[in-house]
Image 1 (tube, protein in one colour):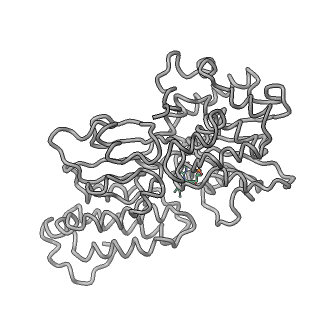
Image 2 (cartoon, helix red, strand yellow; image 1 turned 30 degrees about the vertical axis):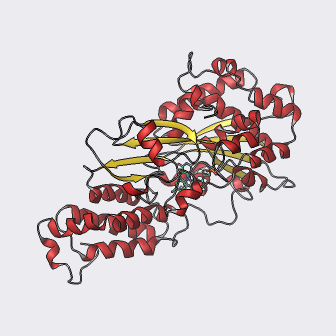
Image 3 (cartoon, helix red, strand yellow; image 1 turned 90 degrees about the vertical axis):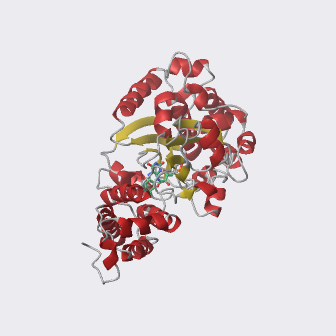
Length: 431
Ligand SMILES: Cc1cc2nc3c(=O)[nH]c(=O)nc-3n(C[C@H](O)[C@H](O)[C@H](O)COP(=O)(O)O)c2cc1C
């Protein structure tokens, strides 16, 4: 592989300081960009790189930047999404802990490209240490003149602000995040207008994930084409895969986009404990449809996973071996989405609650065979019927676990205390 670009900083001698970053070539890209490139050229280079948004949806970063209206007299903002609350996801935390100035350099370049003089990092409330580190390192960057006015002697000014969330998963959704940033309740907005036209404080705003922005300095240094060729078709570059669950070496692995899931699990994460068999894998954070052991030869990129009915999402790979109670696993995931539903849309607010209660009843030994199809119906009624995709995030695991592991659910409703035998009577969803 051509080089571990972000992860080479993970264990670097001297730690995560501005001096160490500069000693290893840091803040060179931004110097060159400010002196030699027009904002549009920066966006073109990112377009060429095929860098896709790494927060989950995979929207091409350069294309998003190009939507900022150039003739708008309003201020423009860059908002970095560091909410990272999807279960199974911890890659952005690594970047903030170990590549802080790489992230800042990416913020500077992206802000220059879109014409922003103010950028925010919206960080999840639970990341206390990370937030403190960001504030401390931002101060170092200001002290050196890398943030603030007339950066590197040019006309470019940039202020960078850390904004802490208060522990709500929904605030990772970009429009809920913007509401929260404005001091309001974190409820998603209807789109359009998209944030690039009307985002923070009704001004044109680009929201990008931490990892997306962290790759920008490398792209500007090495060139968009170089980055693009590291990955697979239409899915440029490298990617941080966070592996957790039943593997010998859980952690964050930086690999080319499109590395196979099998290679990630068995070569990089050390495989399963001896004697254990693979049962299921969630490839992209808890909302991604689950895969069976037969499906792990898939390339881990946006297009390949979509083709088999799943998604790359946040690339948080959750590995489950044959000791896993799949009914309990789905219950835990569903409980999370119920707890985190913001309550704005009825299908999500009510549906996630019904699903949680039915799954709990099954776990308690009071399941009925009709429950399985009821759960599938609930999932179907949530999908696509909500303002934001949190509803889909809850429905997709329901659909995929129940379909791919139906036998486990059937065994659960018939085995547990035998209550499942009265299954076909009409039952209320709520008891
Ligand atoms: C419920 C929900 C939670 C989300 N959480 C995050 C998150 O924690 N971090 C993130 O970058 N994107 C998250 N997203 C995606 C964002 O809405 C948005 O697409 C992303 O920040 C855009 O950045 P990107 O284009 O660089 O991926 C979430 C989306 C939804 C629907």
